[in-house]
Image (cartoon, rainbow, N blue to C red; front, top):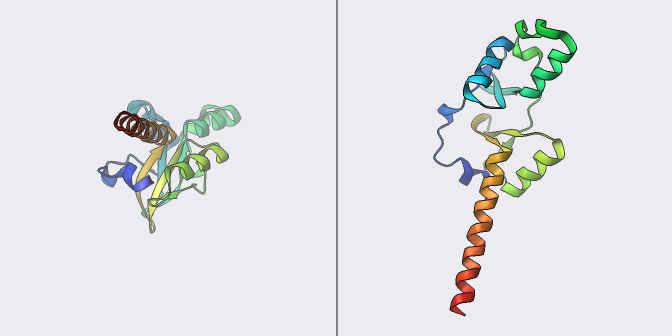
Length: 143
């Protein structure tokens, strides 16, 4: 199973994102109101970086509340680590584990077509394992 099967049926227009010139304060409000942990940061129609809860915490620890008025482009994690639609789910999980990240923009050419979390990947993998177990049970019962 690959990433394309995971984002199938999701509209790229539904991806919640911010731009590099928006204030950190606005992004923090968006994270809280949507109850999400990260946002892709866009510039010129391309993914410029990722803004996450970790970015907020690190900046607050370093600068205090003054960081809330800075543009996201100055505090985001950049460049963004991305994946493509043809990446196998296990490879994406491995990448996220190795790089200690929890979100990946999905890129098709230069355009972002999805934004996935490690939770999305774990759920897909568990569903796949359950399907395989059920197929094995059926095979054993008919043998």
